[in-house]
Image (cartoon, rainbow, N blue to C red; front, side):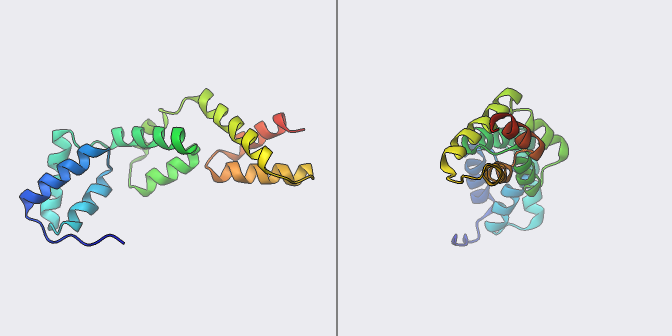
Length: 158
C-alpha cells in the first residue's frame, strides 16, 4: 500500500505533477487522483488540470493512443479489454475510438493466430472439442472478440 503524501503546497504539487505527467502519458482521472493525494483542495485541482491541458502535459486522446498501442503490443490485449480499461479510466468514446485506431487490423489477426499457436502447445487435452473450448476461453479473456476468435480457431484446428 502506498504511503499517503504529506500535504504539499500548490507550488510543490505543481512541480511534482509536471514530473508525473512528463514521465509518461496519464489520464485526467489519474492526475486528479494524484493531486488529491497531494492534499490539494478541489478548486486548486481543477485549476491545475486545466493548466496542464493548456500546457500540453495532459491530452486524453494522446493517452488513449499510447495506452491502446502499448497494451496491444506488450500484453497482447484485445480491443474489448482495452476498451473496458479505458472506460474505467474515464475516457470518452471518441478518445477510445481514436486510441483503437493505433491497432493495425492485420497485426491484430496475427496476434490472435500467434496466441492460438502458443496456447495449443500448452493444452494437453486430447478431446478436440474441449481443447478448442479451452483455447477460445483463453483468447477471449484476453479481450479479443469471440466471433473472430472462433472463426480463426475453426480455420486452424479441424
